[in-house]
Image 1: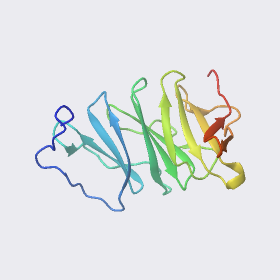
Image 2: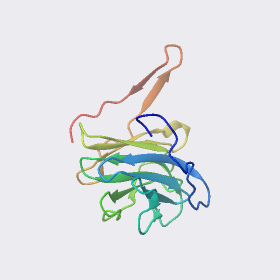
Image 3: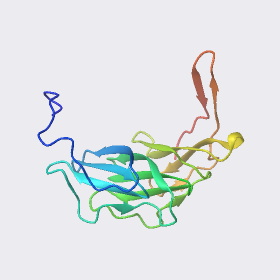
Length: 171
């Protein structure tokens, strides 16, 4: 219980798993959580702590599992960064169905995490495609296309503990 910080009776709750959970995201519009598991996402209704019908949902039929999840309240979507297949899966939040064309190809083979920005209506993925070609892929959430120039490069200043990323402005 977030108000009193007490454990909910019956917690911890168990659900059938095959590999293990690696990421979780809260869908504030539908009061659900999505959990990455194996090559799918399991969606749990928070009002009764049961799986929604059809769950788990496959994120990439070619294998590769979702490592990072993000929820987009503006477009009512759940995004999954599929490690190993180089794709981004996108599902509608209401009935958890894959968007046409999903999963979408990225510019790397190992997207590891993702997040959504309502300010730019963009999805950002950390992506690895060999040590010299790591970067951040940016998708326009309106049409699920990669922004020209993706992946955007970044570097790290270990002395001052700062990260520098190419700036992406506009659609």
